[in-house]
Length: 420
Image (cartoon, helix red, strand yellow):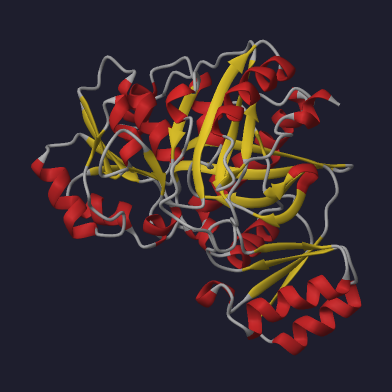
């Protein structure tokens, strides 16, 4: 098979690399990809993930068997629909189905309708109305931009001043543009978070191994929300009973509900969950693989990933087998200043010395020599697999130390919740 992966980040690097492990795969193309993928035999092509016409033309020219669309923006723009209309099989939700990620207000109304457990919430487009509701509810409170904001349009406010600033940023100052013309204000939930992703085809759900992401920029879950600073899988302190409950009470009703809504979902459904006294509840749904969860979950898939996707695209039952022993841990190297303003073009020193798996995200090759330069906020993720969390941390942070450089930073406590 020849396969096209759409996207350019660490998630797409992990997807492409896993596909190439299959004896059924001849070539994996990634559009646009990044320079760091080339060392793994992935063929990149400089086509924007949002250029449907050029992507379809490329897929036809290379006679690809099917396409995986990685990021949320092209999914919401209807790229899967465009491929299907052109007679090319694509793995990912339709534009209508991707709305479960594209609008937090839609997702909230959907969960309410189908009795899927989540925090209580109200949606607002008017600042004064939102402000009055905020005063009535008090803090802590969660304020979310309705649309896509690259994982950054969420503020968990523990004091009223922070909550008001978040509201002003979104509704008055257009900090997130059109994504925040509407906001969702939801009750704060306290508990342990985890990510549960599943392959979904209509009403059928095939869960993956769970992971735990670290959204905040700094140690101890301090600082602003980011796209994710590291992850690990599995999560030993989340019981299988909780996971089974989440599958039965959240994933299956969501898949069936989307079919009932005329938005049948095909692709990866990601549930960001929190364990409360009343059981697991939904924090958010995404319509694609999580990043950085993919980089620690896919390496644990023992089954042939390409054959799993191929089976689903042909409405067949996939074979899924997961590595149950040990733990895979991943730490993100980010540009100094991320998730706010940061510089690009900084040399990633020590990368050649790293003896661990590296998934490139925001990197590019220097014009001369072998050096890699930064080209984004989250630059790369380094991962390690070991018998335990502590062993993986020890192994991984020894490698991360080789990347120490004032132009970058990383969290030193990824996975620590699992050893407390």
